[in-house]
Length: 124
Image (cartoon, rainbow, N blue to C red; front, top):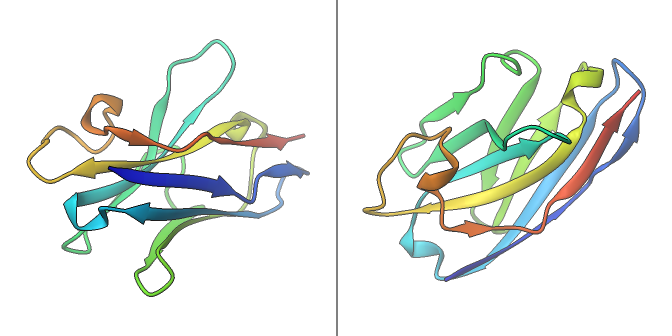
């Protein structure tokens, strides 16, 4: 089992930046990939970005060129740098862990079995 705790959310103006951090602990060797998801009111949770153990990175089309995912294995943190923020980026952001052998697509929430509690990002 892996514990995940997000931080760094807040309110920002259009065009501004925020950096989200997910601190993780526990059986991290069981994790194949790490992802960031978001959920806006009345909408389904959607994949934003993911990074796997081979260093492969994926982004949703809506955030390409604006968001950057990274992982610091020394600090056990997963970051999401968000630039040029838009009102449509407003959502609760979650980090998640996809275990080895679980399979599935990076943007599919069912591929992940450990989730943080979420952090609110508001862009206006």
